[in-house]
Image 1: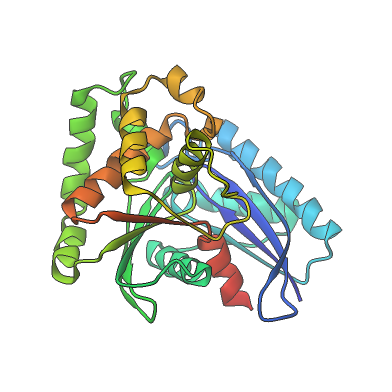
Image 2: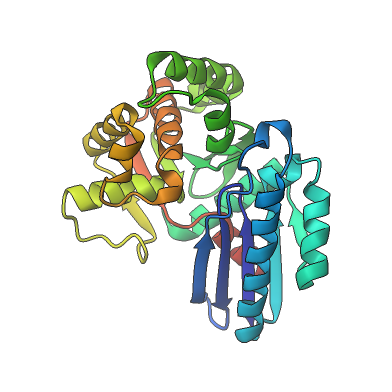
Length: 304
């Protein structure tokens, strides 16, 4: 069977097409488009007209690709930007009308479950772990081991939300950093309680920003890993900390010139580094692993 998975994220829309004849899916096609659906007014719970139009245009392109690959089954999921927007339903209806694609707006809990299934498929979970998925609208945390999911929760502290609310300086000054840290400290109180109880030893970063962290480190150290084909990447912890501090202290232009940086993440990577470092410190974790498998692969696994 030929399956198409569409993930409508707050920053990026993804399309994955796979053949599922055997035990392991064969990826035939994948792409991502920086639609920036949360641009401008995500904290006002509005998809602005320009972002709305970009989203519809992107799905029209995806629809043509799906037809070209003669796909048997399509599952399209929308996450934080659509579920929180007052005009999110209008957006879903516009996509249905223009492309015939039914979009399922999933809850934060469902999102976390699918992220877990995707990460599990990558083989990244080897012991008691905390999975972290930093999106534009929300951040999901999943406490798990290689056998079971123990606890999960989605928080509305995504990079686009925090950037629009707090990121006013270049490079980010201490006042902006402290405002973000104060906000996430209050938001994540129950996460830190559960981590105090279970004491996970590994933080698994699910794709997205963690792929950019990995790419920056790979380029700087001339490593042989190809993130486009790797399922996982184990960070050298000191390399990660050094890279994150450099990102936090750099200007927009300095970050934009870093080998391995993609335009979409030039500013959001600062928020991602700040949250990641805070979670690592509070949870006393010193092992960091990337899973390139995320929600999309979880959706694929659910359809197989």
